[in-house]
Picture 1 (cartoon, helix red, strand yellow):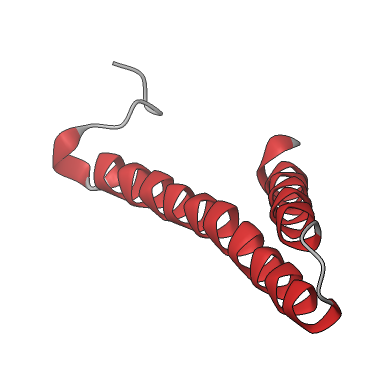
Picture 2: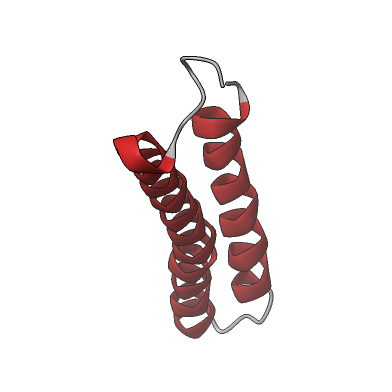
Length: 77
């Protein structure tokens, strides 16, 4: 084994799993919060302006922005 290979007894393996789980949770939160927030904004504007197209538009915009933020933070590494 090389010096950089994580071994179960030294805590390195545990730290790498924790970091991966943390990133996964953060990415999941972005992908849920974006469409929910922009969908809610679209829904409110639909109710206020008496339209029907702003809720789906808000959901799509929220998902696109969430994917973009995830790509900016984690996709370039």
